[in-house]
Picture 1 (cartoon, rainbow over the protein chains, first blue to last red):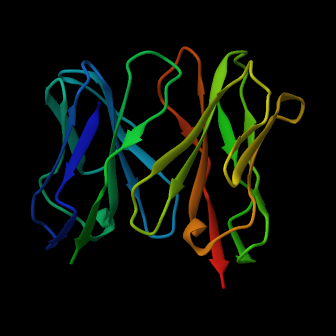
Picture 2 (tube, each protein chain N blue to C red):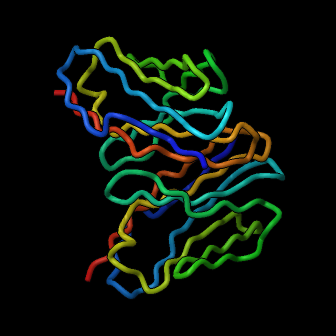
Amino acid sequence: SQTIHQWPATLVQPVGSPLSLECTVEGTSNPNLYWYRQAAGRGLQLLFYSVGIGQISSEVPQNLSASRPQDRQFILSSKKLLLSDSGFYLCAWQAERGGYGYTFGSGTRLTVV
Amino acid sequence: AQKVTQAQTEISVVEKEDVTLDCVYETRDTTYYLFWYKQPPSGELVFLIRRNSFDEQNEISGRYSWNFQKSTSSFNFTITASQVVDSAVYFCALVPGTASKLTFGTGTRLQVTL
């Protein structure tokens, strides 16, 4: 069966520090991968998605970036965090065929101080 | 373009009450899929149901039921005899049959109290 791992679960980082969040999927090949952010009490904001290795689409211009170095690995990064980067970050995978839903990871709660 | 509207921002009910969460969608595609997800306080989004546009049969799973009406572009979710454990944010979502990215509604926060 397929599983998705996301870590760390919580993170407290100072303003201006770098960020690296990792997401890996097991039990499937060539998944579509997504990074979402959720501010406190708000909805889901799509940040990046990827349909294959090295293929990244950005939905919102910001100081975050994403990379997909391997088929089942998706990384969210920042060189310098801002206070506004605080939030709940969710990774999700989806079967590559159209019309399927997402399976979400357990999320990372990031607090920038 | 697709759009999903969850007009109810927050709903509060007392345990054992029935509650319906509304979801209205817009799409020009004839083949599409609708979803409901539950986000409990722990944060992880949990898949509840996937329904394709050609299947308008209502579905029941325990205390949960879903009413899909293409005529009104709605896919409403009813919890019967609500329980405190049902307290969560619920998201409705849509994806065209040939596409990948889901379009989510803004979510409805359900608070069930004793």
